[in-house]
Length: 66
Image 1: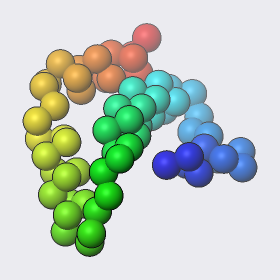
Image 2: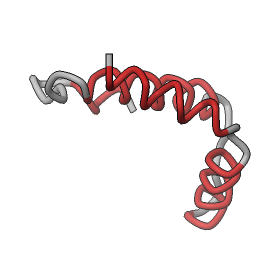
Image 3: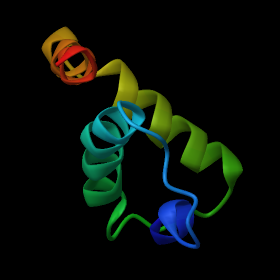
């Protein structure tokens, strides 16, 4: 995850806000979760996104608009 914005590859303008909102939570939750295979990672990601309340995504979208 640390390499996403290295080397001048930062997203422009409003994309920075949504990336920070989403990837901060994703990165923090990935810490300490070893995955044995691709299926385990996919299941974890599906659960991560499916169990986020709608408000989580609404706040991220609102950050794009302001």
